[in-house]
Length: 327
Image (cartoon, rainbow, N blue to C red):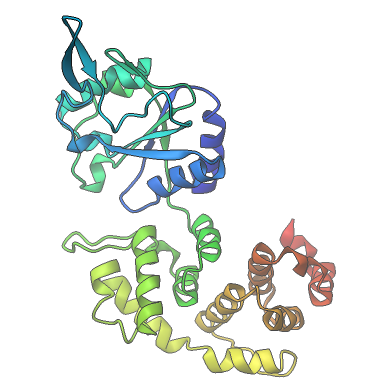
């Protein structure tokens, strides 16, 4: 299931009380999706790491009241006075089997002993798969049967939409347009590997250091040595700063690059600056000069950050000539 579809499904499933389990590889955005869905509804996310619990922690501590033992629930479980939210059981299958057993009643019956999960609180869990070489225990069949199971897939198109909205560095977005198979890639003998999360980390580092070359000794420790080498080579071959400035100054006369890597870089840089009026004005005039598939990517990226671009004369002319690309 793609990330955008996962968001839509979770929003629908929040209308009922069944617990949901999101499966996916490390660094693919499972927790980010949960937080995005919660934020869209104004819900708190209570992050509970089952791997840090002992089997008896969920029950709390007993105290004597009127000669009887009464259990005081732990503070990390939401109280009845709190506003609705999501109890997020992250990395639940990294917990030992006895801790998982302690989750049975909470997940299915929404209670543990005398404690009851308040109305309005939903349970979502997440975990890595055994084949991802993460620390996991087999999820017991009794616990597994208490969840709706959803599998999160890594999708380059979905990630590009997310990356544009979250200001990921244009050289990273351009590189992954060309080498989309490296969005998630890991070598068996390296600790660092490429994932949606590590590409976001790489974007921040590149922006702080100023370029891939300046961060050449850091990037292998974020995305792995292979992707880091390819990214550095891509940046050297597709340095579009001068081309971009020339096109902004003269969108109808400045040379347009022909190499695919330089075209992807140009489109990504312009799309990332789509909120700027000068860029939108130049893009409207440039659309007719670009190969149609690159023009479509540029137009869509600008529309995502500035929907009024739909009234740009150059965009309207391009639509009349190539409307089938937007069908």
